[in-house]
Image (cartoon, rainbow, N blue to C red; front, side, top):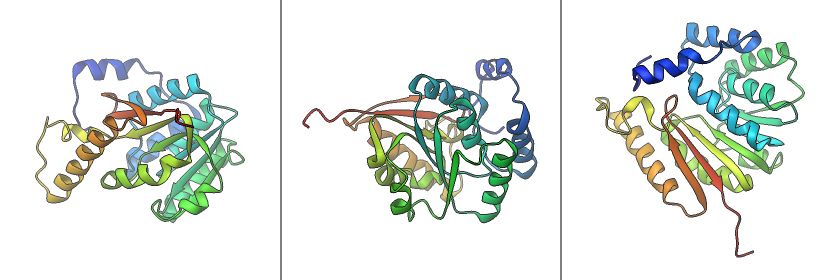
Amino acid sequence: MDRYTSKTEQYIESLIRPRTGTAAEIEVAAKADRVPIMEPAGMEAILQLLSLQNPESVLEIGTAIGYSSLRFAEQIPDARIVTIERDTERIRQAVAYHKQAGLLDRIVIIEGDALETGDTVKSHGPFDALFIDAAKGQYSRFFELYEPMVRPGGVIFSDNILFKGFVAGEKEPEKKRIKTMVSRLQNFNTGIMEDDRFHSMIYPVGDGLMVSIKKHDESK
């Protein structure tokens, strides 16, 4: 895959156990149809952290064909997953996979643009964890809109935060659209890392993962 890489990363990913069942089926379909899903190392990192946190509710921005929401639901058997997707066909695929895995009763898909579904999502909250994995150029707006719905002590995961090595300057983007997106991701990273309301760190796993823990408001 065309992204920042190294022998160390390849070695780590070679040790990750192959997925089975519906998750493995989704991986095959995603590769065939060029649907972006989370990198294996990044996904395993999130699953470990979610296992430690044991959240009751998780909000995902960007369902795609249901891979991450399925993995979350399988990893945390008691959690309720709410996920947002605007593509009707991808929703249809996600529902089919969730049904196949017996998870329909635990995963709620909200159809619409994540920048416009705030009121609907709020009725399902608050949430213990938030996973942002949608339009990279809109991360700041997603974060601003949905972090208030995360409980103090909750965790916010932002994926693709290093975007194929462009964000850290390992490669230089040529297309104007990519340059704009990279600039926005850089601004997002700086803004969140400097925000005292959160304890944040960027981990170079997968395509880059930011983990932000929402601090308790000590003034209350």
